[in-house]
Image 1 (cartoon, rainbow, N blue to C red):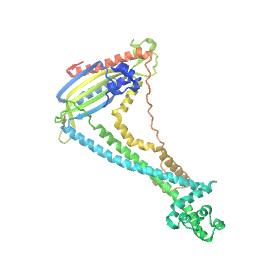
Image 2: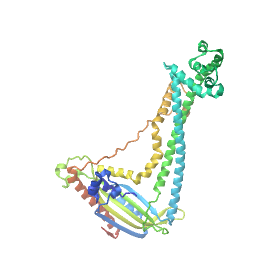
Image 3: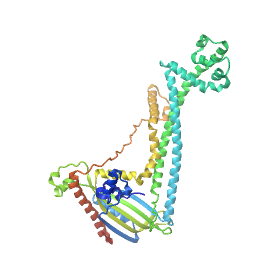
Image 4: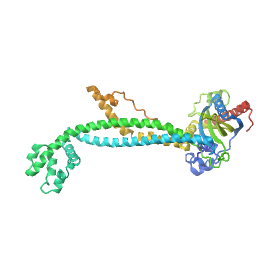
Length: 480
């Protein structure tokens, strides 16, 4: 169940805006631990408008209030936008089809993302193995040459010579009489001269000589081929990563739109009768106006000593506007799949006072609540999967770019342009990390005794003026 904005505000400041705030603080110890669904909305002074018309549309009601809030200097944002149609309505069928199309497209692209992601994982694992093998070849030029040769001989025995079956060195040394020394001799011998120096019978030497020559040839050729394969795999990795990013960009709009087209579960809502042509809309706007200390000092509302006072955090007069629409969707024309809505609108205006930290906490709670769950799933399905592998991907791709630069210095490679070698490297933009608001500091004396009372007075005045102006402008029947 999605918590209401009033409940979230009640959790953020239970002493002021939760009817059971004291009980919750006593039970849970701190407001950060309070479950939002346990908060009981505190009865607030509110102004209500009711508008019912079967001939005029509901859109002007919403946009008049929205424009009016902006005219009064309120920084306005939409917090809730839910709808539900009765199953028997044409609106339900059309929006269900649109949602299904978006879901199918999003699911198809997610399938492509999973395929490419598996490919990226396999390439990374292959590159790691290639890197280990190449380290052995690099060690041939260092003082660890003997250990590198032994490691490469083991690889040759397990990968190449083993294909000979019973005539392989290991099979003969471990399973045939008279060749017990063959394996040790192969590991010791570096070339044909070493074979001749080792005290072995002629039969073992006849087997050992061609194997040593074969290994030495393999050592030269395999190093070159492995290096080529390593470079090709890195180029392929770049291609797959770019494809993954592109698929992620394509998937997000479909998944987000599918979520926006989802209908809210209304359960036993009496206004939604299955066979009626009805729609329920819920919209919530929050308008904020920062408290201006100097202007209030000049107006005599704050002590003169606060004229140059700079608060540690801003204080906002807030107006919460809730819309509840019960409408009848009507199609504009048979040719156009657009609807207009006529019906009943109930508008509620409430005044709150929130400081800067409380506003940030409200946004966090909204993101962590059910309102942000789907968007988090979208991020997890697309962006986060790639970010988990980003360090390993960068290791191989940056290595490629460094080698391409060295090639450009030594000479022009006509194939470098095909893999983006001449493109200017873009610096990776680090994703900004949102700092979580911890415990909200309690109000200082000035905030509690001076700033909040003035901000509350301004918020209540703004809420009433919005209500009053709309009522007078439309001559709507109303009650407060």
